[in-house]
Every structure is written in structure tokens, then in C-alpha cells.
Image 1: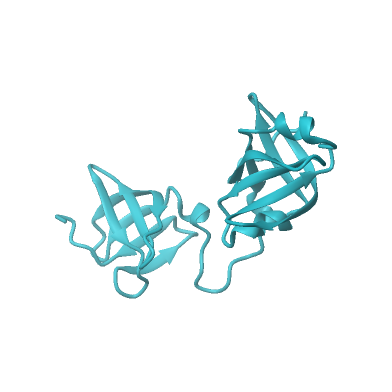
Image 2: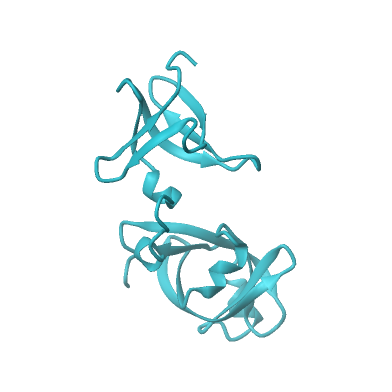
Length: 170
């Protein structure tokens, strides 16, 4: 069985079934949520095994998404996928626009002040509504607002570094 590549990104999870024709309800982590239905295939991990399944149909439904995989012909087959993790390969995504980044590309980058003082590495991001917050883990955890030009002064993917205008004591 084929295994997903090293840059696999979690895109959602199967939360239930929908109807009797093999559709599953999906909690999507894509933005917008219905974008997960636009991928022609998804990695599906269930019971410790990964397999790549073709997406036959999908659409937004209420606050979630419903998907139909080619291999799930009925409700029973769909029920077997409840709890499964859905993922995509990083290279399936279009290149980001100039000055924009996928969070996954920022994970693990070094974070330092504009003076070069190391603060740690990017562990993740938190969506707050007003602006996203970068979680930086070093000798302690820091939450730095992702505000370009104010706190985030430079992102250099090639150097593996993000520079921030941030008081290291804070």
C-alpha cells in the first residue's frame, strides 16, 4: 500500500455518514471549509493504515462538508470511515501568492528578534478572529500576533527564519 509523502497536511476528519449512498460528513480544516471537496483524491488514515481514495463528489453542507469517495458505495462502507483522518500532500496545493504563506510551510522555522536574539521555533498557529497568533516554543512558550509589518518583520523560508519585533522578556 502506498504511503503519503513527508509533507502530508491534515485536511479534516470523517465525523459521520450522510444518506445511504456512501457519503460521509467531514469536519474540514481547509479555508474555506468546502475547499476539501475540490481535491481529486485524499489520503485517508483509519485503523493505523493510510490509503489514497478518489473523491467522486463533495459539497458544503451546513457548517460542514459531505464527500463521496469512489470506493464507498453505500452507508455501510461510509460508516467504516467514521473517525478517519483526511490529509493532502503539500505539493497538491497551489503556490501561495507573493507575501503569503501556508502555515505548514512556517512550522518549525526559527524565530528571532530583529536584533537576532533567538526566541524558539514555530510550533503552530491559533486563529483568534482579529488576527492569527504564532505559537513559538523556546525556553518558554510565546504567543506572537501574526501582524506583518508590525510584529512580523521578515519571513525567509530559504533561511528557515522569521524575524519579529518582539521584546524577548515578554
